[in-house]
Image 1 (cartoon, helix red, strand yellow):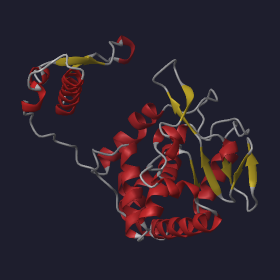
Image 2 (image 1 turned 180 degrees about the horizontal axis):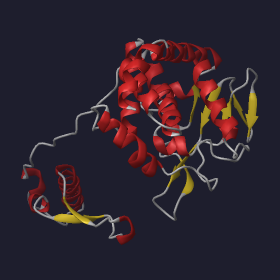
Image 3 (image 1 turned 180 degrees about the vertical axis):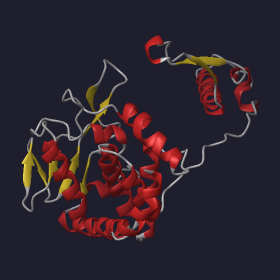
Length: 291
């Protein structure tokens, strides 16, 4: 049964004549077969534990092909500079936020102006304090159900505060000054209707074509998070700091960071940002060839 699953396909997407999109058949992955094997094995073990089955667990002897994981790409500072100069708004600002905060695209689209404190004073939003020059990550925006809605984060550990540097703060102030949707409840990255931008549209219209022009056909929103991880490690952040900055839950105590810890993490972000912005002049010359 598990091996047979690898010979089958399932339907992805829907026929959409208006967009010239057709549903396609995709084969089941080895990972799906592994999940099926584990579930089947659990059923037999449960049956044996309750003396409803006395034989061997047949799932134990199933041998599946090795999983082939996609290569994870990350960008150098030079590549990121070229990319930021080549991307249009709001893709450039969204990429800038992601590469210096670790926010994934759903969290970026879920940001509201009340979640961002661009002042040098503490702010309190919905009873929760936000440090000066920081972002509070509390929700995400999803278009998978009901045409788009705010949702809670996938895991409690993803709820966090991210320090930002002066350069990124200036970028966000620029977004606010150009947007007609700058109220506390408005999305930071708003479409013409006042709803959060459609990340898929931004990808198809900006990230994908620019990535191909720059020789990065693999470019996607997830690349910025991989890049952030790589840069954080280059700055020799401690394992606990990495867990906190990435929103992981493996070290739960990192979620109780105090002001001193946030300042230390801010210093790491500032070091990352300095390397990024210090090369923009040189990178802009290279980027000019792709406009």
